[in-house]
Image 1 (tube, rainbow, N blue to C red):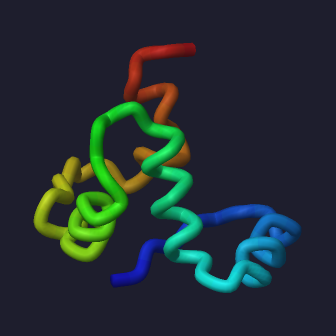
Image 2 (spheres, rainbow, N blue to C red):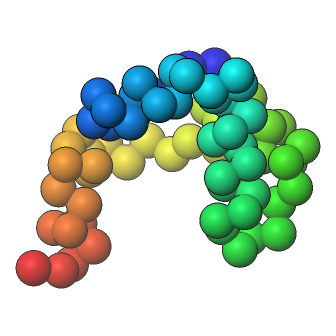
Length: 72
């Protein structure tokens, strides 16, 4: 599985310097989101992300999220 994020190069350099960047991201998700998922549950979700993905038919959803959320 590969997730692509568009992040500033300075942050990308710091992530590449981590011994295990993928585990770091999972640890951040576990600690930051109050959804009750454990590290193992996050790994299972991320490994099978395509099975829970929904095709919205909107190609620019991330770029124009405020429009689709109804905010100005």
